[in-house]
Image (cartoon, rainbow, N blue to C red):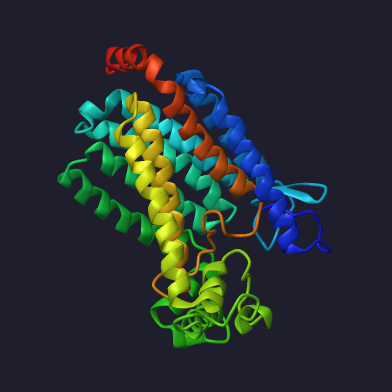
Length: 347
């Protein structure tokens, strides 16, 4: 999340970040970024994200979390870089070993890479992005062809880890959010307040919404963090069911296009990287909407291209820029890169 100061209009600030991010997309997509396929580049990106996540724990807390670096009036969230780094690393790892993904050690190794980043983000504490990283890893393992037997084992492992986190890892307020999700009426003025107000906002939009700028839940500040964590609820109130369908249609077009690019990718890395970006966007969308509808506990996640903030916008457009560049310049080097991937399968 990035800011230019408290006195600046949210709309003006977000337009500026949107412009910066779009220019970044055009720049990245216009050049050949095939170097991201190299092991050295992938490890450098992962290492940078890992180091920043360590250093951010010593940063000044924002809203109780050590999750942002602040330089003047601008803030940067290293967790956003960590998502891109994880996509690149898993894409490289799976592109060289997907033919032998049935070997359980590859699931352990890839899970360890993910767990190292997720653990640092959880310590901040940032449950939302921790879940996003876990979902990203699981999604990429599924598209790589993980066996049902291993998937069942992972499900059991997730229950065990969840139990450990419940008793010894989660903060008291995080446990309270989960309890309020199971029983929203248990603390409607406390931990259940945000989820309750979000559902009111979504429901009050009805068919055509209240109109742009006329959402009472957000404008009267009944809905907290309506510009970030609950922006979908604010959108649904103003645009209604029809507007929500149009929004989902736009996301569906993006996801279908990413799937098409992955299907025709020049190399295994390109395919896995593109699918990773698709999974990342879909995970953010599903979790954010699920929270606003009361289907998931409140964890505080953004929705792609909509939530206020700069660092996540830069990540999203940057990831799309890399996908576009790989698709544009990948054909010429496809044969050489693919050969190297298969020669290094045992590496």
